[in-house]
Length: 189
Image 1: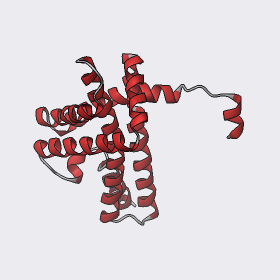
Image 2 (image 1 turned 90 degrees about the horizontal axis):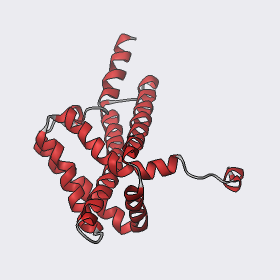
Image 3 (image 1 turned 135 degrees about the vertical axis):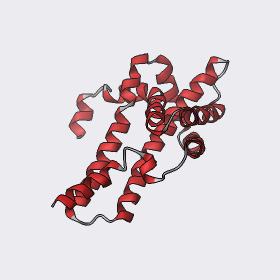
């Protein structure tokens, strides 16, 4: 029983610290962050350009305190990923390959949210200089996402990365949390 509990704790701890999964240097994480955020930004601009425009508009009009709402998507992903992994471990079906695979999937979903957040922040920053340039914003956001990994060690860099992404996600998440619900919407279920 003690071995089962220790294995469960070891598996769920992997989600909170990327160095336990990959064991890479800060420069490697910076490069991965740059590429992942840039790729996510390009994919979002190609497939959901209108959604990105709306997210940037929300960030411009939103409160600076909305960054706290931007943390919610990451909390949800970490909770859902950790809970599912914990349940698999309790059922006794988790293997090192499955736990690392599931942790990687959870990490990729979190990076997707981060990519959107940094895309919004980068696009917002390009608009300060003149007209909005979302394609340039994807590059600016990718550069911003890499900076924490180059400046501080992994755990604080991860926190700074989340806060930077949360700044871009906050206003949209706040709008979603407090969105207007009509009687027709509630009646449909």
